[in-house]
Length: 253
Image (cartoon, rainbow, N blue to C red; front, side, top):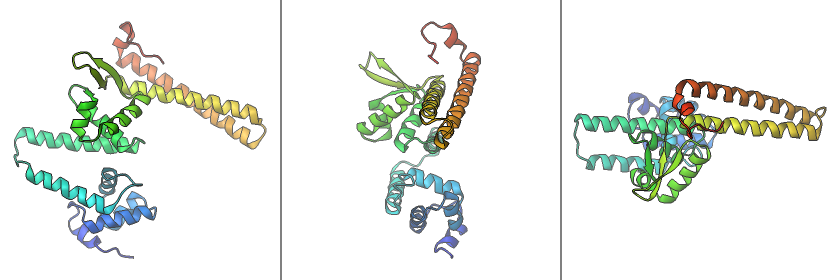
């Protein structure tokens, strides 16, 4: 069944999404269509639909009217800004696009949009560290939103906290082994899952269907956890030699 507006989208495949297209995206999400299916109906690349949904609340909270208003507001802000094409402004635009791409990528790994934005902001800042006030001002969101995102990132060990004595407040830091710590946290979680599954298999009995299932799950997570630990340790030995030679800097594995 043809969808109204498809011909318009196909005539300008690189153009901005129309209000009608946003309504069709919302309808497609309600119907449980995939991004690729929605994109095919619109005659758009799947990446266009993915970015549109991620930028405006995600698949569970996407609303066509809100997305249209947000787009119009961004356009008004751009028109109010001075139009210059010098090298610094072009660089700023490229950095903004990179930040948006990084955010969408992190959302696809399971992070909430705000948490992904905070992580992207930290990664793309030259200093690699910002205070909560810095993040609130840069991202133009509430302190409560920043606090919640920081909590999630600290729980996954993707950032670390250090005290700034000069400003008397905490700074949140991205350092060389941030992903190493996050990987190790995930490996430890696999170990916990493996232990739970083994205990469950013993409780239910390995001869029962549920017990056998838990035994197999436990063996899987044990194997994956060990492989992750070995890979992480090999990387640390080759890429982070200072971590092994500097007292007090070696991370627990």
